[in-house]
Amino acid sequence: MEKEFLSKMEDNAAVRVWSEKVQQEKGNILSEGYTSELWDFTCISVTQDAVQELKEIWNQWDNEIKQLFYSNYGDLPYLLDVRIDKRLFRALVQYWNSAYSCFTFGKIDLQKGDSKCIPWRNLRDLILALPDAKKRVDIFALSIYGLMVFPKALGHVDEAVLDLSGELDRGVTPVPAVLAETFRSLNACRRAGEGRFIGCTQLLLVWFHSHFWKAEKVSYRVFSEGYSPLKELIATPGRDDITEEKGMVIIQNLQEDDVKWMAHWMVPDEILYRCGDFNWASLLGI
Image: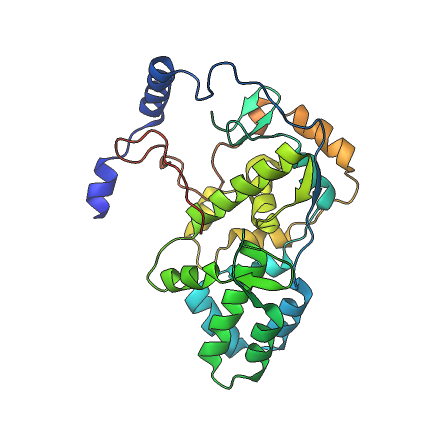
């Protein structure tokens, strides 16, 4: 399998040629006559659900239960400690281009209902009461996914996350669903000019820091035992002197050299830019 994958890899020059060819043949993805109807400023809320309670439960567990969680769900608990910079996040949202579903920073482009819910208090009571450590770990992971990664109504977990948790046991990645929910929520807030961001604020800010913030970032750390991008970000001192207005100015004036086109922990020569014969693949929700 590994040899088959590596045989399909292409270098950066081939990717650039493909990109230019597709652009020339198919042109702009927007329909002719499109006009932007975005608000000049989007007032967005990043109200989060039960994070403090989740942290308190996690801190009460001993190392044995925490290791059981890590072995089943990886670095997910580090999301609990990712600092939410509301001013930076609100500044970042102003540059979301809902037409292209990407961020547009000046001349820099990164890339051209109703639901049934489970009350959080019910899950919390189960976590605190169940004697089986494995079941407690599973419900805690479901709670993080339902309250933080795929939030819905405050104080509730979308039942659709139950289906996702079943897929995780089979090794299915949640990344496409995370991206789809992020795009959908950003589009809705930008078009309305306001709203609550219904996505994982922590992951979006981790992405921003990994691509733009100047820091000593060494790609080979990904091969080190125990390496975690989330853990590394949590250990990085935050800044409290950047206002929302200053953040917008910084983002607007980003230069090409400021942009890292891949996160520093990715292998430099491997990037997915199409799927089979499809140049663009739609990302479905959860």
